[in-house]
Length: 194
Image 1: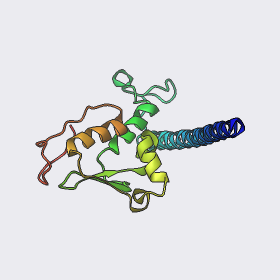
Image 2: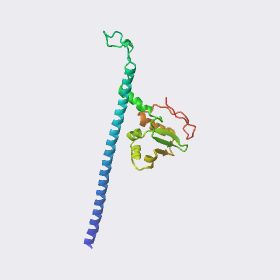
Image 3: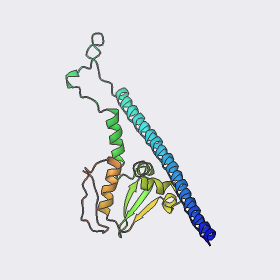
Image 4: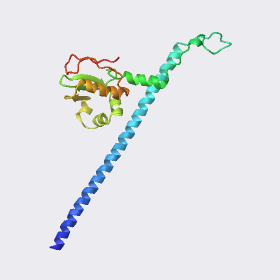
């Protein structure tokens, strides 16, 4: 009887050890997935930032080429004639930030639609922005969830105002935009930015 109890105890210990090993393996795999996802997000964010900076730089170069400033005396000075009125141009980073901010609540280039509340208020969004700035959207857009295929997210029980604020933060990093309209879920609501 003692040997049988030992074997049951040993069997139980082995089961617990096997369960602990499976849990440890699951955690390692999850950590590896998280590292890959974070690396992917960083690469996408870096690529997006680089492209925004390139676009801003090309835009500023194009403005300089198309609108050159006349010189007072080509032999004596390389300064523009109205140098006392010169204004410092926005930095490339500032231009890139403005370009990124301009995507908020903008249907241009949007490839995802968010349907909010019982009235199904729609918000245009961009996979790249949502994926980079939100682990929730990143997971949903990279998986086999229906949202990754349909490019539509439905939030039946959420208020449009609350999701408006969340999207505002995702896109701009702050809450400077004002929601106009009442807070009820009806189709006559209007959302705008100042």
